[in-house]
Image 1 (cartoon, rainbow, N blue to C red):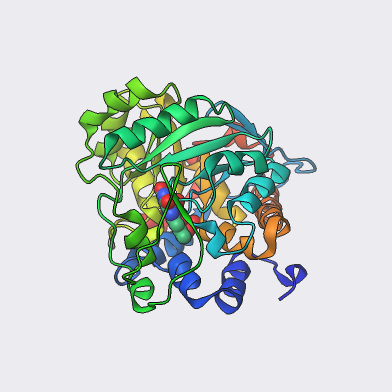
Image 2 (cartoon, rainbow, N blue to C red):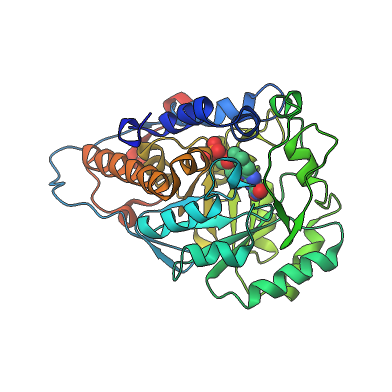
Length: 364
Ligand code: FNR
């Protein structure tokens, strides 16, 4: 379908499923085992309701926020996703350019299909985040951190912690054909595993499963960037991250691509609010997983999140190049502003963490 026919985020995923390669679609849309967490991420946003207020003069609304020291036009960031050239020829370049046009931030994946410097150039002058998978060969990770030091466009480091081993992605495993794109690991081009099987497995075998909380000081020694642990799935771990001096957390279950039966991210957010609410004041709390509507973004802000990541829809929008990515952001913004107006909310900053705007009856 033409871009003008795409009116919501699901439309991007549907368009990609029809037009992209089967293998690429299995990689992007797939998740672990029975897809329980993938589906729960989406449906649990749908079980949280607003408590709207009326007659509040909503003629103008403000979606600007500040996330990790960066001013953004709305609190939405593009999740790190591997090998974006499987979705379209512009790959991560489209994400970088689209993010810049939309005034939001793209988090670059360690396993991108373009080199990091080339990706940063695509969004020249715009801030980026960088997602790190720690390599079994630690010196390679240290070299990446060194490289980032010379790249001032990168404003924060998201250390992915929820994928100690690559999970079982059956759709990806069933299709044996390989995609013809290069994969970067640690800034170096690497070959895709010719033995077939899952793209995810073959690109993720370098990830260090020995990574532990004891490594936070090692990371701190090698970078001055704010460190966020991505993949927090319990209040206890949120607290540990705070105690170890991390600058933030990303509540995430890898979009259902890591542990299947991991809780929907909204449940983890609620658990953190209940068991250690101080986390929201003392660290930046970001969230991703199953966010498909501007109204989901508003719900996450009301729960206390400072930044909301959107994954698959943006990856699929690369099918339409930069214009697609921009269109995807425009749809989210339009839905967010509409939800704000209909809730009686005019400024996101004024309501962040204020759950009186929510009705959680169905989640209790
Ligand atoms: C991912 N994700 C991911 N996360 C990460 O830390 N490093 C990575 O390289 C990747 N790669 C990746 C590839 C693809 C194709 C997808 C769909 C996802 C997880 C991603 O950052 C994010 O947590 C989820 O995608 C969010 O869920 P939704 O929005 O896709 O439902």
